[in-house]
Length: 137
Image 1: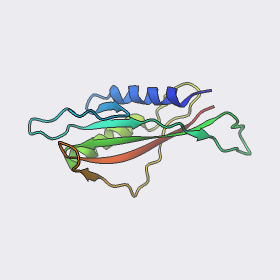
Image 2: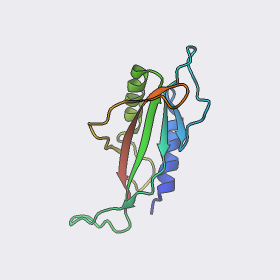
Image 3: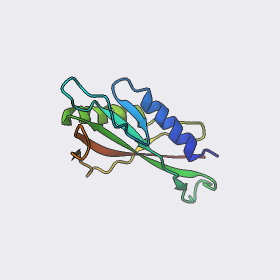
């Protein structure tokens, strides 16, 4: 059976391999990379999730299966940078199979989610939470 730890580690590895968005695992460093004018460069952080038991199906045996959803927060010091980073993260993750015996990632981000500005950090930045899910066998 695929564990939440395996899925999370695989997701973080994919995020860290992106060339234009910096990937982080469950924390954002205090001294994030910034542009020459001091704005936060785009990044994505994966927040670990234990998932839960998959619902029983009349068609498929789901005993032992995991229904796993993980939040990936995307942020940047500029609205347009953040929107471009969201596009990059979605293009990178949606449909990707992270590990054997797991289905492809599905973007389950609600349409109502909007960018928010965080002024409690320095430098301030725009951010948005995205949600990706998969089922395991």
